[in-house]
Length: 300
Ligand code: GDP
Ligand code: MG
Image (cartoon, helix red, strand yellow):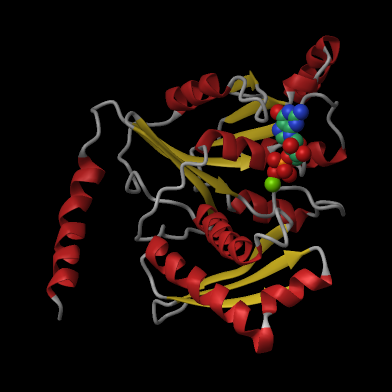
């Protein structure tokens, strides 16, 4: 075994307990389920709250029944945001079975953030989410989002309509897009969360953040090799992201370009360019994730 490797391992093990235990006495922590119909701004809110602070570290988070969408760590609190698949009201009628499923995924949470679009009155999809929320007992924070595009009279009327659908433990008008009301929202969350430890190291990143980071690294490599040809038109979609039993992380990603000619450049003769981009991206991804990676790249 080589010396350097050994030293790294010792440092890792030595630092972890400090990071976890060195919290003030009134530290709060907990799991917050973020729910709401599509398009109300859940993702925008998550991004705004978590910032683009994508720190770089392993080990990766434990996966629970619920998907961790982000971890917010401050000196005084840690919030683990979770997504509850099934609750975001599908197009068809939310059947009893689906309500049960959605309910079953909630007990892992300490409280629920119900994100709504207050620029509009509640609609069918919102009513279905509310139905699930009424059937459970966790405190619900009503987040009235998009106040930046809400007319003053609409704000009152719509807020009242949302409020009547559940009995919120707290409510807050915000604009996730403009960053309005977010500090207040975090303060309210802190008040409501129980005293508790830091469940994850401060620089832990969630799988969603990892995917984002992986996509950015691949995009960066593709852009680098194309830079004279394509200034901006490269998008990357991470389609699979799985840790295999061997510990190798399998990632399948698709690179989207606008024109056939760009595709030709990216693929290269006999696929040589794509291989090169894949190799360069993989090496960086391995560093960032601290694991071995198998990267499958496609161009579309
Ligand atoms: P999700 O489906 O609930 O995750 O919603 P998204 O976060 O994807 O947002 C849906 C759309 O609403 C996007 O176009 C966002 O830019 C927009 N949006 C989100 N929050 C706000 C806000 O506070 N104000 C405005 N004007 N638009 C917002
Ligand atoms: Mg979303």
